[in-house]
Amino acid sequence: SCDRYQSSYGSVSAGWGVYFGIVMGLLFAIVIVFIFVQNISVRRDKYSLSTLWERERTAKYALTLAEKGDYLYLKGSFELGVTKALKKLLQENSHVKGIVLASPGGNTFAGRGVARVIRDHGLNSYVFADCFSACTLAFIAGVKRTLGPNGRLGFHRYGLDADYQVPFVDIEEEQSTDREFFKLQNIKNAFLKKAFATSHSELWIPDRQELLEAGVVHKVDARLPVE
Image (cartoon, rainbow, N blue to C red):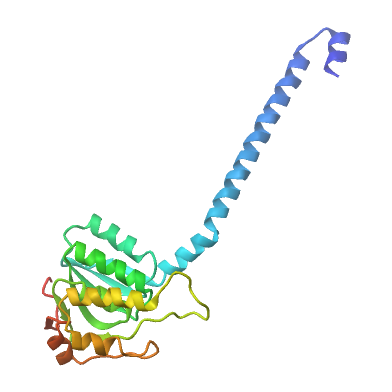
C-alpha cells in the first residue's frame, strides 16, 4: 500500500509514518509481554507451595522485643524457621540478654535450633506461663533459668505425630542427643529418667521443688530481673 501510494503521489512521508507505527506497535507488544511474564513470575512465587508453608509456620509464633529492658518474648509453637528469625532479631539487637518463653511445644529440631542460639548468645531464660515439650529445650539452654509463680514446664518422650514412617529420623537417637544436652546443662539423671519415661501422648509437669532440686530451674521469681 505504501509503495502504491509513493508511486502515485511521489511522497515517502506516508510510508515512513507507517513503518514508524509498525515499529512502535512491536515495541509496545514486547513491553506488554514482558510485564505479563513478570506478573506471572511474581504470582507464582507469591502463591508457591513453599511460600504458603512458610507463611503458615510464621503465623504460629511471635518474636517481640520488650518495650523496656534487655529481653525478648518468644510465644507460640516452635516451627521450622523460628531459629533463623531469632538469630536475625538478636543480630539486630545485641543488647538482649534474656528470653521469655511461652509455648505448647512444636518441632523438636526447631526447639534444638532455638536452644543453640540461646547458648551461643549467652541468654538467660524465663518462663511465666506454659513451656512444654520442645520449648523445654530452649529453656534449659539458658545460662540462668527463672520460673515464675505460674510457670510450668512439661516433659515427655519423643515421638512423631504422623501416620507414616518418616525416613532418616531415629526417635531414640534424637532423644539421646537432647538427653546428653540436658546433662551438659547440669540436669540430674534421676530427673531425666523420669522426664523421658513419660509417654509421648502424656505430659509430666514437675512441681517447683523438683525443678529446683534437679537443676532445671535456678530460681523461682515473679518478675524479670532485667527490667
